[in-house]
Length: 218
Image (cartoon, rainbow, N blue to C red; front, side, top):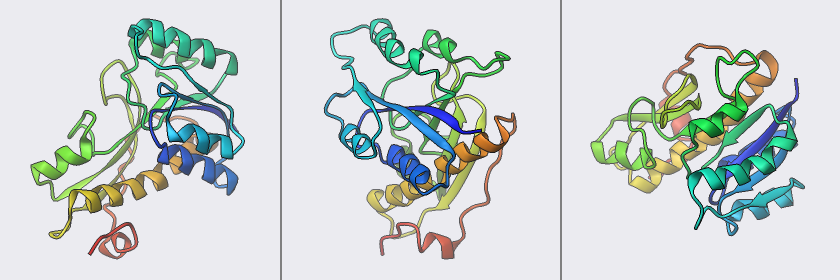
């Protein structure tokens, strides 16, 4: 089926752009009904508008989490979306918010997140930095369904990449971001075709030859 999506962003929205481009290229059977940001100055909003996508922004500043989420829901609920995608949305969503997006059988929440580590390793806002500082020889990205816990919930897909001896944090993050931009639209297309299934699908580590084409800095 063609998915109806809302995308939540806080900054430049590179994963949002990857989704919109995949739709434009007909690699993803979906419609983005709204791009929402808690940051009215987020560059992602202008990018979304350039794709002809409606946008909305409500700052969280000066509002309680509950009050801000209520305003977000007033924007999203009338859209009747199939999934909400957190694409660099730098806010933790509450259990009360998630319950508004329960699946028809109440087995999961229709909210998807992409995280810059191989969960459960390195949860939190700085996955790449934490993995790099730890000295991880292999890191990666995770696409998962959101639940009541931070960076938790059923894993839909993971993709790993190696750390090179000459990596800087910038080259390390750049390679990871390129994988994010590849994997997230692929997972959404999988859902469009087959729906959500409760299994973990970890891809094989990206080969050295592939890594050479994905953001390596020498």
